[in-house]
Length: 262
Image 1 (cartoon, rainbow, N blue to C red):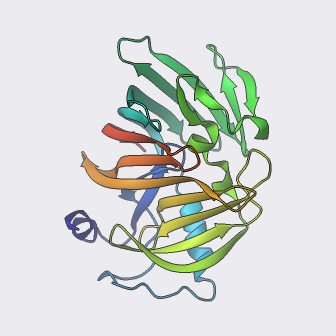
Image 2 (image 1 turned 90 degrees about the vertical axis):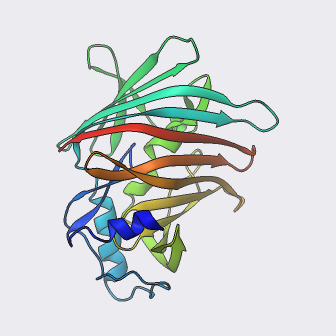
């Protein structure tokens, strides 16, 4: 694909870091490049300490400073008409504490927003004055952020990606890219997924896909990157899709604008 041919021209040391709370990779200057180009049709299996190196680089990509994302969320419920919502995500991720604002508005509807604070692995909803109002705990992960759209805190925050316990499954390919699959061990119970398999780009340690299985082993939900686009000087995901396979529905985010100040 042409876009990845262009990505390969970036100098060694670039990698993807994540906006949209882990989910949207953006190409910036960084520290990670696992293997030398040219790209490989069939990536070799990682060995020794290589899986841990890729996983640590993947987890290190959150310190991105201030950012703003604008786009459209399209909800496609099974057997019903699609519904669209304008979407804005703004955040300041400069230190150990990450503040993020999420705004949603429907056709002709009033914009609604929520602010959250993430610190030391815990997340709180903030009130209008910036004070901690309510902690998002395990029982809240499967709850919709806004009642008119079934996008949950689990979909957006993806807390299981903070796990340091994983098993390497092997090489893969995704959108023509060399990639590797990892299974997150003991991802959680109850509202949390019982098992998570993530696909990570080999060259840029970027999240490309996450499959979530429930207690029965059914792969009930999937998050996947649908494409990439250049916004100013940065490449990032232009499309993100959440699939609910049990309900046969999906939510797609189409990104129109991205601004980042490290």
